[in-house]
Length: 108
Image (cartoon, rainbow, N blue to C red; front, side, top):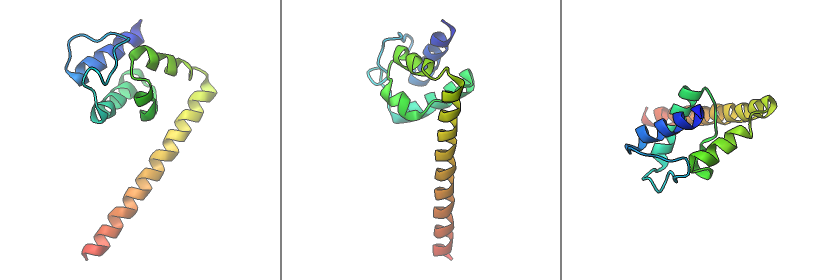
């Protein structure tokens, strides 16, 4: 289907491989954590869907990932997932900003 094809295209692009099947394991194809971050970003752009990076680690085949994404078809689940991701992102940004301020003070 269309989502499978988009994910196949993303994996092929990020991993630099010509052929990816929906049951191929991301890590067996040469993927690693940096690749996953790129895949995460591309999924967000191409599918306009937010998925946790940890889900990409846990669901390392396209078929498994689609099954996971389908489990969030419920709008309430989508909102809960997005809310959780936004809270973690805001917390991470806050921590990073605090660390930058401490480094600046230390340098001064």
